[in-house]
Image (cartoon, rainbow, N blue to C red):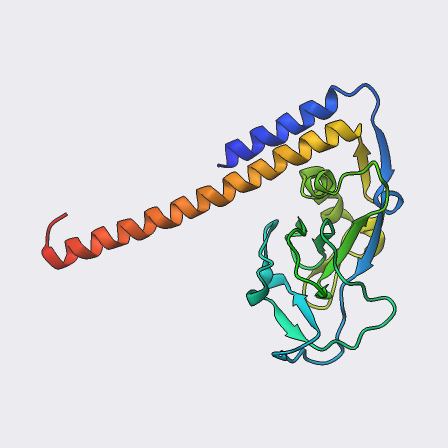
Length: 217
């Protein structure tokens, strides 16, 4: 799987290298960047709360589970800086050693992101959010975050200024769409492979348990 991911990354870079001139723009010039919802006290789940909250545990390395049943419902004390998430928004994990990005789709209404995320919203018509989330997860971008990032009290933190300063190559919109489509296919394949491995592991466990009980394998 690692070899396949590296091959895909090389393929993406090959697509970009075929473009004669690629403009590079700072992320802050092509996207709005917002902080997640910051609650000064412990968030208390409420069955009939007005909003849903996406936390770090709801996101797995770029794959987002937005099933309404998995998200906390609560009553936030909203301020003017808090934003309700939209489909196409990108969540960027700002804390910890894995600063992955995930794009939202099929989003329940009135959903907020927790303070561990930055919310990135494409502000330029010719920048595809699917392409942007791909680039945020690339080694070049991750190197920028690791080199320029700081440390919080307990863990590494990517500060807003570091995220804003990321230089993003902006090829033609057609190339962006192709890369975004290929990236989504690779994510789908990873999810299918993971499910297959889990099912195979369960089958092996059942076979081994039966063998242990019958003393035959």
